[in-house]
Structures are given as structure tokens and as C-alpha cells.
Image 1 (spheres, rainbow, N blue to C red):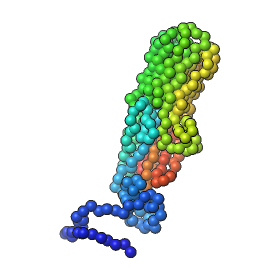
Image 2 (spheres, rainbow, N blue to C red; image 1 turned 30 degrees about the vertical axis):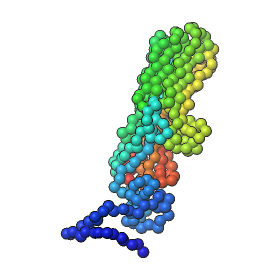
Image 3 (tube, rainbow, N blue to C red; image 1 turned 180 degrees about the vertical axis):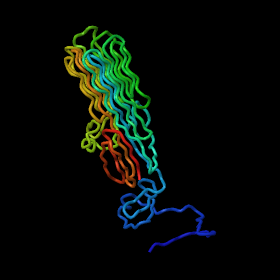
Image 4 (cartoon, rainbow, N blue to C red; image 1 turned 120 degrees about the horizontal axis):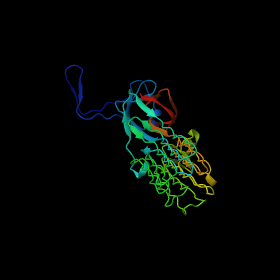
Length: 359
């Protein structure tokens, strides 16, 4: 039998009861709570999530508290330029777990209300640009409620002093042109163009590093593009979960996102590597550019100087983690999957746009 212990309870007019000190609910961890034999109306304090909960007869529901959410929001990567040009910048990256982009500090969890609609958008990768002389295109913006990540900048086109485009991470430059700038706390700049009027581009910036500058002699026929800037590790889900969901780039136990695309090379060039985190690799001997990997936000590679097209940017991804006492309703138009473990749900969005709400 339960026992009520109190020092003082005051009775007032009507049915009001006053407790002189704060009321302390019995605390249970999520695992201990799940072992209870509960009936409708039972209330506890969940010490795992730090939220009071009430049992509604079917499930434990958070009581009078907003939904606290960890997030990883990655925008679409930019495409490289065509015809021996620079790599595309990675999509902007914002995160509360692991690392955020551009060398910034990890962000704080966001708090959302139940019963309200919140917009979710997955940014597309910048499309490949055709052969001839064309700059790359920027990637699409990704958003979850108030958290917005900027699409990666397109790589510069061939020609003197051609600059990469600005974006979440900047596109690489060509022919002494500047690399595009990255957005604050989302990504780094693209590599500046080479010191000579050459036929190779620099790498696009990544969430974790500046794109690499291409360096070689003027007019060299074996000019190799610069490598893409590295992405960052953000282990909001495990490597095994990322592999199953086909998101991020897995290396050992870590999951990387938002690597920059490699610069395109000249006729007899070696291949250059995209940044870890889904950046597209350039082809040897001036071949067509490689695409950024889908659902990483990786930038696309610059196209080769044999008048070949660039690689497209990789699409973005959004991953959110919240207490399993809440239920998310996901609107049409969004492609997602949800994992449940250790008192939390983790929802992975891989395409589309639409609204979500919590209850």
C-alpha cells in the first residue's frame, strides 16, 4: 500500500489544496519506468529525460513540457564547375552532437511545443552543369523548424580570376580566383585558385576544413585539381545505423558529413579526392566530375578539361533525437525512418519537404 507523508497541507475555500513545500514526484529511469505495472493517471519524474510524465493507459506522455530535440541539419552540396574547373562546396552543417560546421561550437537543443506544425525541408544537391564553360550551382537549403542550413557554393568556371560561389561551405576558385566563403558556423571556404593560369580547379570547402588549392606549373598538361575540404564527425546515430539508412560516410565507428568536392584536372592529371563526408572525387586524365554522395551534403567534383560536365552535389539529410515519451506525426511529402532505443526516438529524414508535429 502507498503511504502519503507530509509536514503540512492547507485547506482553503472550495476544493483548493495548498502544499507548503514543492511537490516531489517519484523518480524512475526510463528502463525502470518501463518495468512498472501502471494504470491511467499514474505520474512520475523521468530521471533519464528530466521530464515529468503521466501514463494515459497506453503510453507514458511528457507532462507540461516542450519537446527537447538534438539535431543534425545538413544542406545540399554545391556542384563543381565544368571543363577543368573547381569543386563544389559542401552543404552547411549545424549540430548539437559531435561537431558542428565551420569550426563553431556545438549548438543547444531546440524546444518545440506539442500540437504545433513545424516545417522540414531536405536540400537537394546542386545539379551537374554541362560541358563547356559553366560555373557550378549551389545546393538547396535544409531546415528543421527554426534551424536552417545553407546550401553549398558552386565551383568556379574556368578562366582568369574566377571565384567560387559562397554557400554553407564555399566553392573552389580557378585561375587565381578566390574560393567562395563558407557561412559562419556551418562550413569553410573553398580553396583559392592556383597561382598560374592553368586548367585545373581547387577543391570545394567542407564542414571541417578549407578546400585544397591546386598547385602546379603554368600551362602544365598534367595539372591535378585540389582535394575537397574534409567534413566532420557527427555521431547522432551509430555507424551501423548510418549504413542501414544510407546516410553520411562511415569510417570505422565514425560517421562523417559535408565533405567538399575535388577540383577537376587537366588532360594527363591524376585523380583528386573529395573530402571525407561524401565529397565527389575528380577523374584522372581530365574525366567527368564525380558526384557528391546522396544524404551527406557532399560537394560535387569539377569536370575535366576535356570539355566534360561536373559532378552534382549530394543531397542533404536531417536527423533529430527526442524522448520516446513523445510521438512525431510526419506529413506527406517527407521520406523518413525512425529508430527507438534507450528512452529516445531518432528520426532520419532523407528527402522531401512537409510538416511534422509532436504529441
